[in-house]
Amino acid sequence: MRHLCDSTIVSPAVWALIGVIIGGLLTGIFNFILQNRQFSHNKEMFSLQNKSNEQAKGILEEMLNNKKFVDRSFAALKGKIGGFSDDEIRRLLIELGAIKTTRPDDNSEWWYLKDRRDERNKEQKS
Image (cartoon, rainbow, N blue to C red; front, side):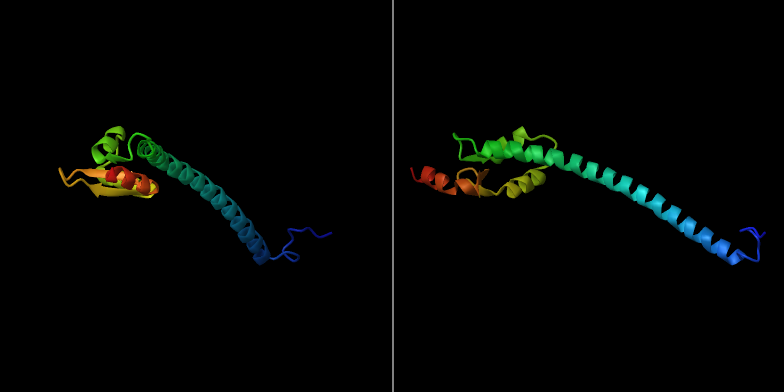
C-alpha cells in the first residue's frame, strides 16, 4: 500500500507547487484584510476632515440667507467661523455660490448668494 507522501506518487515539485499556492492565497487574504482596514480608516478621516467644512458652510449659508440682510460683510462672516483662514472662508463661500463685491466708500469686502442677486439689485435701487 502506497502513501500519499511516498516520493514515487507525489514528487517534491508538486509539494512545492502546493506550498506556493497556499502561501499565495494566504498572502492575498491578508493583504485584502489590511487594505479593507486602511480604506475604512481613510474614509473615516476624510469624513472627519470634511465635517468641519460642511458645518462652516452651513453657518455661512444661514447667514447669507437671512431675510434681513441680502449681503454680509466678510468681517461679519469671518466672525462666526473660527479655525479657518481668510482664504479658506472665501473658498467655502465660493462653493456655496456666493459672489464677492467691494463697497466703493470704504473698500470693504461683502458677499451675497447669487440666488439672491435680484433681491440685492432691488434693494440697491431703492
